[in-house]
Amino acid sequence: MSLKVNKSDKKYMNLAISLAEERVGLTGTNPSVGCVIVKKNEIISVGQTGIGGVPHAEYNAIKNSSQNVKDSTLYVTLEPCSHYGKTPPCTNIIIKSKIKKVIYSLNDIDPRSSNKSKDIFKKNNILCKNILLKRKALDLYKSYIYLKKNNLPFITGKIACTKDYFINTSLKYISNQHSLSFSHILRYKNQGILITYKTANLDNPKLNCRLNGLESFSPSRIIIDKNLKIKKNLYLVKTAKKIKTYIFYNKKNYKFDYLKNKGIKLIYCPIVNNRLDIFYLLKKIRKLKIDYLLVEGGKILTFEFLRHKLFNNFYLIRSDQYSTIKKKNNIHDVLRLIKKNNFNKSNYIKTYVAGDKIIEYIK
Image (cartoon, rainbow, N blue to C red; front, side):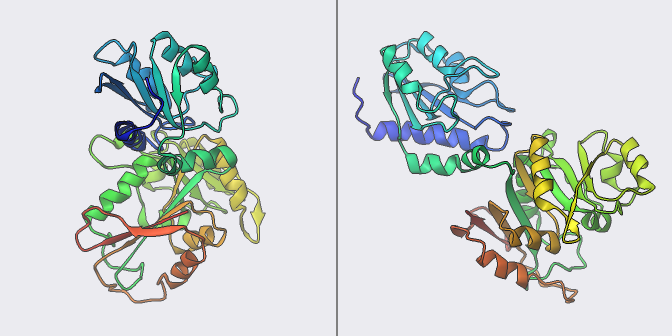
């Protein structure tokens, strides 16, 4: 077997990357990995990291194969793990299965496995080639690499506005049903969703994922409420025992015990410049094992995150409708900050949203 990369190798790795992309944000603290097994120029199995992070993609692909994987080639998006964690090393099952050749796209940055599998495979007479489609893989693992290097969550922001850039409207929703579905995909892909008590009190939102079949992937709800001003009769309060709900506060009042008895986890947060310390709050959120956070707050919260350059990705949903209530609440200052936030690129999302437009900003 040759180690020279050909067009077929790239084709199979592209498929593995597509498999991994589907699970980003759904694999807990583990990276989302895609795997393709090929024998005699035919795909005999594919695998993805399991929801929550286990089993690993390589294990799933080997166990689900339609044929014996002996003497096959395994394509995987990330270097196979070689350490014991929640599962045994993937290198073990690859060796045991007598796979002949392993091609992976990117070296793992986890020090427990980084740059180790190639030597392990070599000692077991398995051909190994790495760094295939590196640029695509780096894009795929942007969030994983960020999470390994930082103690903050990977943060996605989203705000919707009218065609003339206002967030006031007499309608219940600014955007149309197609854009709303996109927003629910973001909720499905994130483990936590953050708003302020003002948004909670004004909109009485559910903050869940309401796409058929994906309801169980609704994110944990997190509310910023310095002085516990949240209303007691909100949907978020009533359902806190069913869906994890957190409130970050600074001062207790008569509502504290009531909210606690309703199942809400109340977390103290110190003050900086008369606001809750946003960095303290985000570090606490990460400790709650929320690695992917969606910020769906209004203009003030969005502005604060942009001011601190905290968004990794940001989505601007611009409706095709004009505002019916032209007060001061336009987002021109938000748009100016977006331009100063060092986003590497921006593009329109290529999906059907009728007359609406969705712009994605990426770091």
